[in-house]
Length: 622
Image (cartoon, rainbow, N blue to C red; front, side):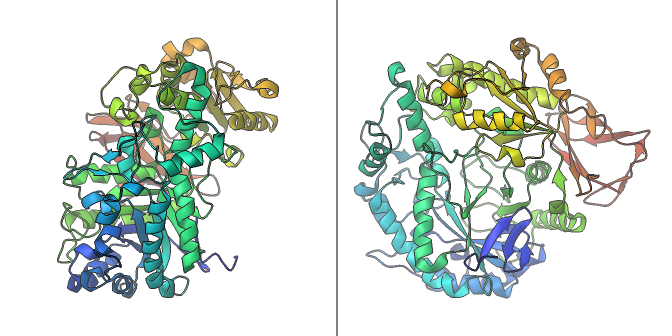
C-alpha cells in the first residue's frame, strides 16, 4: 500500500492499514447530546454491530460570534472522537458544509449566511434562497472564493483536532464532504450560479457569456451550461479536499453524496477528486434510477432511523423495507441517520438515555445477519447493464419551458408519461424519457437481472452479459466510443431505436458516426409494445431460475459467491397490495430466512412467499 494512503474504500468496506473495516455506521450528533450521555450511547451503538460512527461537525454550531470556534463542553470534538474510540468505534467526520438540514441555515454560521459576497446568485442577479423551514436563507455560492476562504478556516480548526487522532493508529478513518441537499430546490436550468466567481470560472472554461434562458440557436451552449452547473459540487469537493490535504488530512478516505449519475472525466467535465469515494445519491433523477441501484462500487447508502420533523413521517416497517431494498440493490455498507435520538429529530437507534430502541434492535438483528451470512462477500448477479445516457436529459433540462423551476418539483405534478420532459422545447426530450422508462419497465417485466450504470462508468469492468443504451439523435461521444470498444471485444451491445448523429453538445459525430459493428438495435415500435420489448431484452440473458413468475410487480435479486453459485436471494413486492409471490428456484434448493434462519419450503422448484405491500424478503441458499 502507498504510504500516503492512510485509509481507502474498496468493494468490501474501508481499508485501514492492513485490515478491512466494514462500513456499518450511524450518525451521532455529539453537540446535541449531553456529554455525560456519550459513553453509554456510543457503547450501545457498538453493541448493535456498528463499526463506525459519523460525527456531524456542524460549522454553525462551532462558530463563535466575532470569530474563532467553540470546542468546549458538549461541543468538544476531540472528546467526542475519543469517546467513540473508547467504545470501539472508528470515526468519520462529516464536515458538510451543508449537510445538516435539521440545523438552522443547514448548519452554516450566521456570518456566512449574512455575507452578500458569498451568496449564490440566480439569473436575475438576486440571491438564491434555500426554501427550508423554519427559516429560508440565501445559499452560498460553491464557486465563491470568499466562501472557500471562510470554510478553510473551519477545516483548519477541525484538522488541528483530528490530525493527532488519524488512522491507522487513531480512530479517524474518513472525512465526509457534502455540498448539501438544499441545492436540489434550486436545480433548474438558469437558476444557479451567477455569482461573479462562478461566471469567471465559466468564462475561463468556454469563453462565452453564461446563458440566462434557452435559445434554440444556442442550444449547445445551454446544454454545456446545464452540464457545468451539474458539476459544481464536484469542483467544490476538489477545492475542499485540497484544503484538507494541506491541513494535514491527506490520505484519509473521503466520502460524499454525489448526483445519482455523475459526470464523465473529459475536457468538458470535472470529475470528483480521486480520493473522494462516492456514497449513493439520494435523489433519483429518473424512474430508472428510482428502481435500480446505479452501479457504483463501493455501494454506500444512507438509511433513515427515525425521521425528520420537517418531512412526512415514516414507520419502522417503512424503514425496514428501505434497508432490505438497499441490500437487494447491492449496498455494501450503510450509515443510519440518526444513531442517537436528539432534539430536531424524531426517533433513532438509541434513545437519549442510551437505551436501544425497537428500531435499534431491528437494525442490530439485520447487522448480525449480514455478518453471519457475509453478504458483502457476495456479488449481485447482473446480466444486463442499462446505461443511463444523459445527452438528451441535459438538453431537456436546458430547454425546459418553465425554467428555472427545478425538475424535482415538476416530477411531483404528474405531467404525463415523460414527467418533467413534457415541458421542454426540445422535441426529443419527452421521447427520450419515455424510452428510458419503457426499457426499465421491460427489464422488470422480463425478470432480467439488470443494473443501471452511469454513462461515465468503466463499462469494460462491469461483468454483465449485455449492455443496453437507449439512443435517439444524441449521445455522449465518450459513451459512443465505449460502446464501440465493447462491441469490438465481442460483448453484447444494444442501442436505439435511433442511430445517433450528434454528440452531447449537438455537434456532428463526424468520424464517430458509424454504429458499433455487430451491435443490436431496438425496434422503434417497441415503445408501444412493452411485452414485446420485455421479450426482446429477456432474450439477451435468458434465465429460468431465481426469477419471479407471478404476479406482476414482484422482482428478485440473486447474489452469488466467487464460484458463481447463488447464495442469497431477495424477493421484493413493489406493489401497494399484499401478494403471494411465486419464484422459480432450482429443484431441491434448500432455503431459509436470513434474519431468523427458519427454513422456507420449496415444492418441485417453486417457492411461494406471502409478501405485504412494498416488502422484501431476504433468503439464504444452502
